[in-house]
Length: 301
Image 1 (cartoon, rainbow, N blue to C red):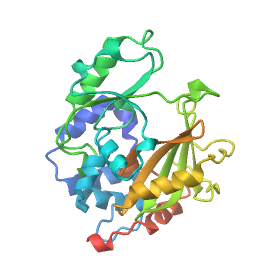
Image 2: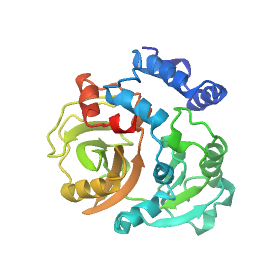
Image 3: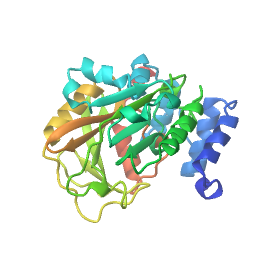
């Protein structure tokens, strides 16, 4: 397995290389990336692994709703259409371009992000805007908006040809340990059935990740992120979170529903159709097959 991140250490450099290779057909590029990142051949004709099925999903599954749901702004309409407006994080502002951001009208703390997603590079947490230079924030947003192209680096169909935009939302705080950030509950859902929960903890002071089944039994899996040394307490609103996840996932064969639970209230995070872009090594490796068992693709072939 080639550790390409050691060769190309800067994420911006890796993004530029992927854009330069946009002429390579999607199927060919996915096979190359899968081999480079996971060290094995990608089987698309009869995929068994979860990571293989995600590559198939990118290439062949086309549901127009996906484009609405990966957009950080329009997904709010989708959540409302499911009768779940109460779980939306309060919206502070929405802008078209980074330079449209009205810094003076924003509160002291907030989360600001590009609406086309793209991971941590596209999300900025502002805990005290008087201590965070406006230009550094705008410059980062400007870069992430400007680099938006018709081709996703991971060849993720749902993210192609998206409108630009900036979303500003209320900052949710971990009152017990503000520096650690809030727990992020990522729920694997298959055809509207929630089956597994991945919880990310201490995102900003030593990121850890645990895997659980829907009954909160620790599955003792590690991935690209180390597991927490101790069990993460079951969230008090777990049953509500599972019901919410199943409601939001019922239109798709597979989607990861990301939720938060803060001060006894459930909040919506995002819908992710291609977690980790399908390039993650689970240990034990058997879980790559187990996570793929309920990922039904035959009816869509």
